[in-house]
Image: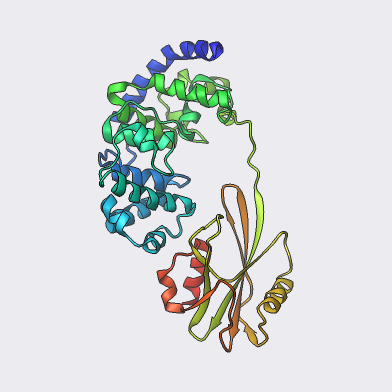
Length: 360
């Protein structure tokens, strides 16, 4: 702890200069436009922050506007059928965020009579809200002095000060949180938080634009040519491979679908009948197993097997989608048959939704 205290004192004077120049850059040269920027409605800020978790701003813009149009306030969101909310979220990924959004909307209506929580601690009680999101809402909506600390902030501070503490270590997390808070101007918390987030997203990017950075001459990483190694992380992400073999069963104008109820990726979304294999297997062999398990004897193969991949945070999903045309419907455990045109009312993972769009 003594070492951390000494480091903070060392960085504070330089940090005050950076803070002053950052705010000047923000007011004069930061032209990044987003519909929620400058927003004071905590519901809209919360919605934008949940959408932007694990999502690029460019991708999230359309979803944010669609949600605002469909659910202009938290009461409207809480009153909406869950399938409608999930359908609107379709294609955005990380569906636990959508579940958290629904849960928190109900909580706000039930426990706060529809009034959005107005303190850092009360915002933090919302499901899916961590310190970063709570700080963003508290500072932007209520002008409360809480510093945001996310990947952008880690990157900016580690480079500006040349900090080699791993940002994912316990000591590193505490250090960056304390440093970020010490640099925060209490009376301009929202302005500063927006400034450092935008600076990390537009200038001090993973591949930084040092040539146009107002602080480059004083930046430790720029002086040492260490931009590519900062911030430091001690843990390497392990990616799990999953092989999902889907069977698009079609009988006339009806298809078989099931809902994913297990605590797994895409929980509560819909999919086609599925066999998951522990390793890569020949499509013909997996098809044979599926047909035997479901006692399907009369069928026609559809188009060629479609193969694609989708990268999630900790998983690489390998999709194998085979179309099977049946003369009559068969009972597939956990599945129900629906009219093909009604499938547009159900939320699917984006890869399956794209496949469906080609077959409607």
